[in-house]
Image 1 (cartoon, rainbow, N blue to C red):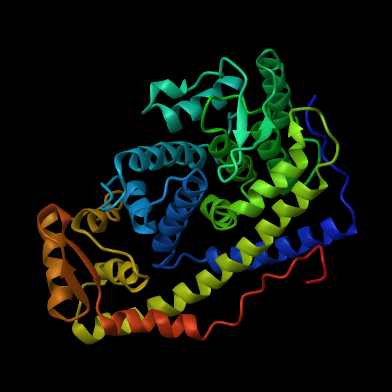
Image 2 (image 1 turned 180 degrees about the horizontal axis):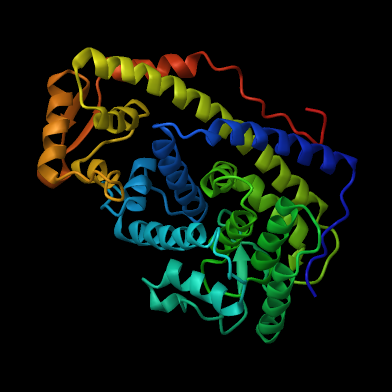
Length: 381
């Protein structure tokens, strides 16, 4: 009934080995807690939310996605985009909560609940319910129909088969099983809206359950958001116009493995860069005699994010040392007076950006990176 998982050839196994090697290096870096891990994890979560929604046309600055992830209002995103970001944030938070839940099982109602979390802000999208009629996917540029979802009468049994497959591990590598879950759900296209986001969220859930590494560092939503056309192209190739059971999923598997490999490289580089940046910022904070907690604001600003009182405070809400609004105001004022931050905006729209000297720290680190390897692992470069 569903797309069959293709047998893995030597190339697929080789790329899986490369990904495992990167994951082991990531595991080593993350094994010993560092003070900057929290900031990196928080921003990785925001990148996943931002990437998945960007694919669907909900565009917003990355720091707006980070604000929404922290439970704060975005500065620029319109209402519809904000609600979409909030919905995906709720669903992904559920995914993270279920990562180590011992009694978790995949279910039809669980998938519907995830969809409700994402789309409940608009009842016209039938949140948590299957679509009622035929659904078509169109090319936004040409208006051409490129795919037709499964017949509505087939949806319940197809979803039941997918759930059964998810609960009965077949021995395939976790990245492959997660990728096939993504493919099958998006091809069934059971919902009126949000099918792509649901498929990507389900993939993250499958991977999170494997506990390969901290869940926020295994997501490929960021990569898919940056390579949307390639993502659509491979889905079009494999889908071949309409739902039907097919065995030709090799292009999809290769695309997913390439995404994981490239994202793992990006994440490892980001960890190294963050460690170096944090060290530079510690020296800066010591020079000015700053409170250690202000490192969070300096780190975000150096990366190019707009820092606000609310987003700064939100970082500490679930810690042993939450801070009050007055404390945050004082911290940000001190950083501004030290010439590290620049205050912009007014009243509720007030935010702070990095001054030239602080921004230069990050630009220097970026300039010394080795060239990024974007070679095709299945095509010799």
